[in-house]
Length: 146
Image 1: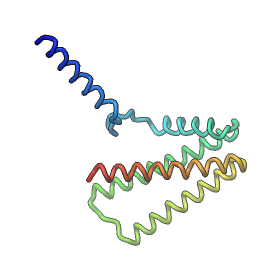
Image 2: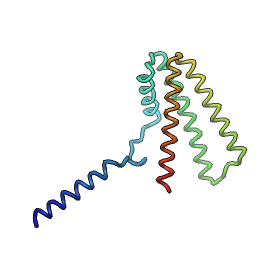
Image 3: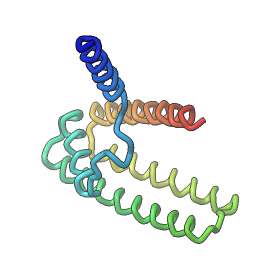
Image 4: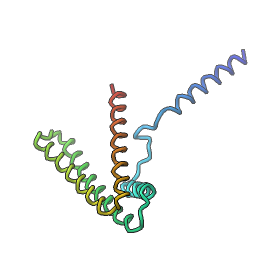
């Protein structure tokens, strides 16, 4: 009887441990980084992936800070709009899309000026990979929600 009880406890322990390993931490459980920490982490990744020199690092650091500030501003505006329960009109949505695309194009142009041809080519391929990963995560999120 004792052996059966120990075997059952061992089985339950192993089964619960195996279930915990497969799960990713939720958004709330992940460590929250400040905008400066996120920018620094992103800069370090770009530096290692693209072999940036000191001058390029300084320029990209400034660019990341500008982008982060603009994103925070847009996020605040969106949150305020959501809190006030005001739905954007189709024209406002279209204007927002155009603004975002203009920002993206401006950012791409700045990166093209900072990076050399090989680095820029690698950076654009990294952007495409990230976009594909985001699409996959969104599909998973939508499937999990249903």
